[in-house]
Image (spheres, rainbow, N blue to C red):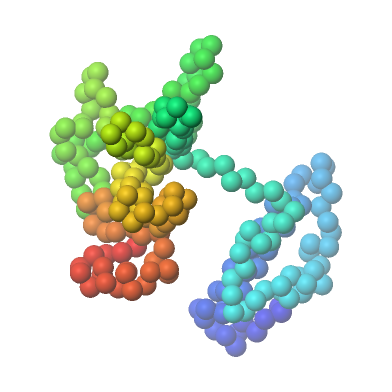
Length: 238
C-alpha cells in the first residue's frame, strides 16, 4: 500500500524489487518473533498498517538491502558445511596438510564405536552411471566406476610444497572438483606473483571442470575486462 505498483507495471523491476524487499523484512520478523503462541508472545503490532508503513520506509528504491544488515540482533553462524582443510606447521618445520569430508548429509550417519567420529559416504565419488558422460558434468568413464573393494576417486588435494627439503607452503581447500584448481591458483599466486599468503588465498578463483564447458569465476564484477577478454577467446564465464 505504500507504493504505486499499478503505475510501475506488474513486471517492472521496481515492482519486483519492493516485493522482494517486503519478503525479506517479513521473513526477518518471522525469524525474530514467530512460533507457537502457546510458548512465545507474538507482537500484535506485526499485522498493523502502521508497522507496515514503518517497514516500507526502510526500503531503498535504488538499492537492495543486504539481509545481513537486518540481522543485528540475531547472531549469524559462519561455520561452513563443506569439506574442511587445515594446514599446520610447527617451529621445527614439521608440516601437516589435512583435508577431510563427510560428503552428504552427515556422511553415512554411522559413528565409529568408542571413537566419536562419523564415517563418510564417499560412494558418491564413483562415476555412478557407467557409460553415461554428458555435457552437464555427469562422468561415466570406466576407470572410476564402482567395483567390489575399489576405492572411489577424490578431488581432495592437501599439498606441502618444499624446496631443498624445506617447507615453503602448506595448503589445501574445500570445493569438490574445483579443489585442485584452487590449489593451482594459490601456488601460482605465491610463487609466480609473490603475493602475501592472505592475499594469495583470498584472491578470486576460477575453475574449468571440462563439463559443464564453462569457467566459473568468483569475482566477475571486479575484473570485467578479464571476463570480456575470456569471452572473446570463446570461453563461457559464469
